[in-house]
Structures are given as structure tokens and as C-alpha cells.
Amino acid sequence: MTTHPYTKELHIGSLAVQRAAVLTKKLLSQVDKGHFDKSDDTPVTIADFAAQASIIAAIHNAFPNDSIIGEEDSTALRENAPLFERTWELATSTHLEDEESESHLHTPTTRDEMLSLIDMGAKPQLTPGTGRVWTLDPVDGTATFMTGQQYAVCLSLIQDGVQVLGILGCPNLPDTKNVHEDNVDKTGHGNLLTAVAGHGARIQPLGTGALLSSRNIPRVEQVTSGSDLRFVDTGSTPASSGRLDIHAAVASHLGAPWPHTVDLWSAQMRYVAIAMGACNAFVKVPKSEKYRSKIWDHSGGMLLAQELGCLVTDLQGQAVDCGRGRTLEGCYGMVVGPASVHGKIVEAVKSVRGA
Image (cartoon, rainbow, N blue to C red; front, side):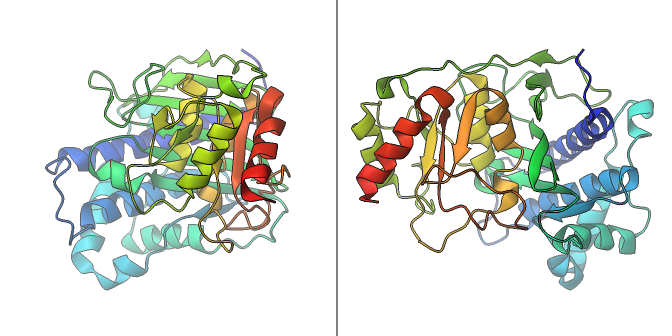
């Protein structure tokens, strides 16, 4: 197996994501899947908080000098005692079945520690663009998580503003090119995809104990014609922050199939779909000129795509800067596609937008 300088980080991070994946599925098993009361998002909130606490506990214990950026803070927990207690129970009762693997992780031992760990992700102390920063999204794809469809538990490591490690746990993802919201793994626990800068990407089944064997993910085909592009997008939820009309016009300009061939709500799952071979490109033209993506919605997934032969840029074709803190501040929109045809996608976006 190829060695790299992030072997320990990959091992601990993968175990932490696997435990958090078990945690999220544990919550789903306790409720009527897909039938949450729309006026009560408690099950989702519990999964977010408990998974963030679980992951940060493991990462901070192993790498105490690293900073962490997480999506959640503990405000809602401090204001809602029942929510707090349910989160505490879920975060502290979920363990990997393999004792040796679990021994590499840490679990909060007090309620105050759990709150502090969650808030550690909300208040990183590092100067943007310097040092080591972990980013995490405990449940990317909340809407589809609620309905038992595709979602991802996401963790990445950024060093001096550059992605070096990506770990995406996909508890409902079967090992197939047919990536679809409703094509859910019914016989296993989903799959874990990882990427290390300069060392490619790998996939392995998620489990409930020790990490299972992994294999290399093939690189994407370097197509040269726009008609060979297969876009992933989201059109099933009106709340999309992207301009689907412009996305459609870009595909038409390139001669690519539309409607998009893969429909996924989770931003990180779109990178996963590319890695699985279900598609090979996506664009995002935000509805608002002021919109900037959150770092945890893309870091790690971007590295996965890059290690497989895709380029990831903003709408002008400029590289994405991961060293600006909680958002991709310098990046307006996104263009992802095989390096061989990425420039054509950027030019199509510019043409359609008149930019």
C-alpha cells in the first residue's frame, strides 16, 4: 500500500467518520423513517449535534493542536433540555464494536465537555490560511437524511489553505454506478470514500467495527467533447441555491444531456457521484451574487474529484482557496469536470452568463 504523511490522520479520521455514520443510522432506526413532523426537526438536530460531538472528540483527542471548523454550535442544546439529553445519550452510547478501533477514539465524559467540543467547531482559533484545520459536516444533505435517502458524513484536513485529506462516509450508498436518492444500500452500511492529496482516492464498505479493506477508485475518463459530459445537479427541491435555468443553458451550449443525468440534494454527494462513475461534471451558478459556499459543503469532496482527474474552480476558472475560514470567500460559484474539458465548461458558463 502506498505510504503518505497522513497515514495516522486518515486512520483516525476514517474511524471517527465510521462511528458517526453508525450514530446517524442509529437515530434513523429509532424513528419512523421519512415521516418526521415538519414542525419538529429534533431528530435531524440530534444527529447533527451528536455526530459533530463524536467526531470532534476523536479528532481533538488525537490531534490537540489542530483547529476544527464544524457546522454546528451548542446554542440550541443549551436552550432545550430534552434535546440536550437526547443528544448526550446518542453521542455517548455509540461506539464501534471493535474494541481496538474504538480505543483510538474518544467519547465525551461529561455534558460540559460535549458542549465544549461542539463549540470548538464553531470558534476556530487559527488565523485563516495557516496551519492545520479540520472541517466537518456531520450530516450533509439534511433533507434527504430525513427521508432515508442519500447523505454524507464529511471530514477533511486542510493544511496552510490546501486540502490534503478528504473522508466522506455515505451510509446509504451502495457500491454501484447507479447513484440515486432512492437507490439505498439495504444489505450493508454504505461506503466510505477517502482521498489523500497526491495519492489518489479509495473506497471501502462502511462497517460497525474495524475498518474494512479498501480499493482504488479509477480516475475519470478524460473526455474532450461537451456531449460526453453527464451533469449532476438538484432539481427536486425548490430551495436550491443554484440557477437551474443557467445550468440547463450551459448543458445545451455544450451539447450535453439535460435534464441532468443524476439528481442529488447533498452538495458532497455530487462529488461522490462523480467518484462512483454516475456522472462527471457539475456547475453551480448561485441565485445571489453575494452567495458563498460553506467550506464544509465542499472541502474533502473537492479533493476526491481532483484526485480522480477533475478540475474544481470558480465560475471564472480560478482555483478554489480553502484557507479563508468558514466560507469559500473568494469563490463565486463552482465548475467541476474532467481536466480535459473543464475549460470548455468554464467558457460555456461565461457565454451563457454574458460574463
